Image 1 (cartoon, rainbow, N blue to C red):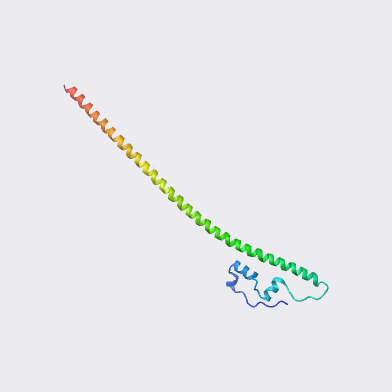
Image 2: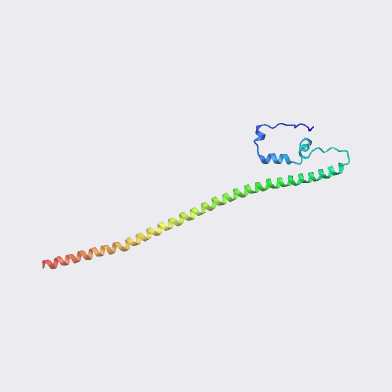
Length: 149
């Protein structure tokens, strides 16, 4: 019969981080009770199949070690992926900010160019219109003067 657990889980432990649970489950400094459930009984077994059982137990131990390493690598990879995601979001935000500033400047210059073109058109057209009005007024005056003479 396996030994009893030393502590009981409460709601906070159950709803805690999966990563912490995995790390705690695979820690090297686990006590004998936890090792019993992870690895099975490790006491001496008498009989002719002892060598086969030791060989199988050795293979199981190797598989457990490989699994522990793989789980550790997966956890580390997940942490690195989280860091990369945070960095990429930061870079994306910065790129968006830089692009929006650049676009704002382009639109401002475009507005300035349009205003300058409109001002130039007004400066050119206004004197032309004034000259046309003055010429027409003089022509009308000359016609009136000729009509009265």
